[in-house]
Length: 464
Image (cartoon, rainbow, N blue to C red):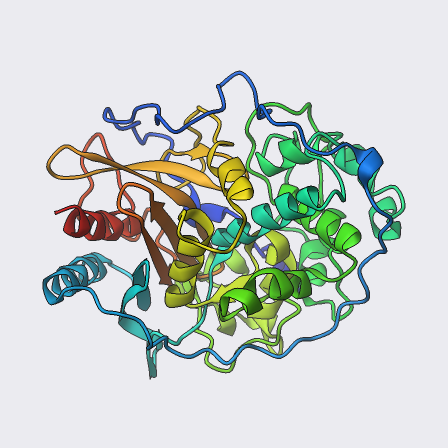
């Protein structure tokens, strides 16, 4: 009975959203929030004005080959970039230090700012109790991973493999792993509705023994996560942030791309852009991976904040890899703040080279004009990309594209400001949950997140 109760107490295995991304229900919507002028998609529709290629143009593809372990990238600090002015760098450092010192429970935070060839980065705290953090220390970037998935799907559409308006289940009819799933749980929704988190898909049960055994199974495959869905799919349309949306899109990308997801990312983005990144659980866990810290009782341990890798039910198990079996397509990327800042710039900036301008425009104009909850700060959602506002001290509003993330002892935030043409990445091996801080820039009407306060400091420095 004791063993079974340990399994059942496994709670909130948060990989694509989780408690650290969720704002309290009492958080007020900032009075300064306005509809961005760049938003092209009206509230009443989730369909862009451009029509994707129909299914009749799709070419035959094969299901992805069996998954095998890939070596971890050799994570190194990036050194061959121009510097910002010294006064800017001093201000960046002050923003990071003041926020880090304000945290009541903390281990380490890594930050980076990238702007068209100029790079600044700095860390505060440790990788674990005994190891100082460095700018080369890799983190799980959690749901910021979705910024890789969205453009990959759009690139496959541009290649004619399928269309935005195609029903995802129809595209998977010849995939045996997909066909093994309970189709009552799978939304009959378009690829676009999945990208927008409006498929009607449900959630998995996070406290069942079945999820634990899925996480530790050595013969894991992506469909195993989908077998944990516990409620039938609802009608598409309303926003509902769900792990299943990203993982089903990942299965689609593998099925139509004929390779496993990490290999597709590597060919499309990691290698061409020289981005140091990998994907859990198919990547070997890096030897210098930062250790995750959080509330242990959320993950099957005894109450108390601490090292999540030392929870007894994960004895002898690589728990970072195990969490990756839930995270995968939606939250499985591992990288550094320097590399993620570069990625955000290459993806969103007109000076970037990650995607053609046609795909960049699809992403930035896909934002639905509706503030949605479930994030550290109310924001709008598009094709696996968020749009939020930052209120500066002088009353100005800065908008940014990106995606937050959190869970399993990690927190992440990714921002790109079109006004300043600058990208910011903030990664922590500490869950920046609502009981862990009162962010330095928060107000009664604007309950900001520590990552948002750090970014605000960076934006104010650059805007001056």
